[in-house]
Image 1 (cartoon, rainbow, N blue to C red):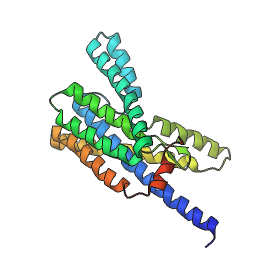
Image 2 (cartoon, helix red, strand yellow):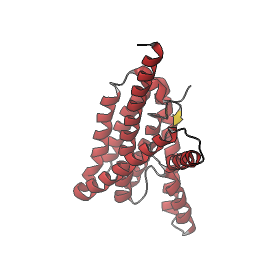
Image 3 (cartoon, one colour):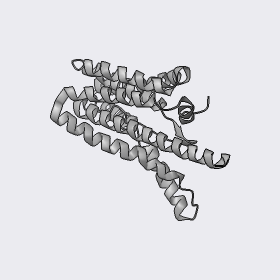
Image 4 (cartoon, rainbow, N blue to C red):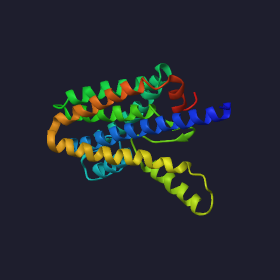
Length: 225
């Protein structure tokens, strides 16, 4: 086997593992977002939606809701920052462990809805640092507007004859989030507040799997320092 062929095989394997990880994390994000929306009435990963909802709330005089949503936007930014710092310092696998702990704290804070809301947002912000790219192609984990946009632009280029197929992977996070949101809605309907323990356990299970992925592979899933 030539060196070039071996490298191609490894690249395919690494890409497949990366896409599977993206799908699993997006599934977790969709499940958590659906649970947060059904339990608390607002999104915990869709910050574009919360920006609009905050604006409308303030315009309608619901200052408390508007301020809480703005606090959520700020928390999401800090979550992303914290995730990146943990990823750079300890590795992206540890980000998932951090997210598991934050989600557990959110499940424990069921009696304090505002705190629970902010903790869920913090977790969804941090988890974005677990995977930032697949072989140089950017991917989103807790939101799919960018993924759908990149998919659509890639489709447009393909139609006019630019035959790169890299854009097709953008459907993976959308499918993961869509399936996760369905699962989250079902769990809330069947288990109520107890359903919020499921994302924490799922994140912990995902952490266990992630620690089995070679460190040199995972280093390719985050942006260059």
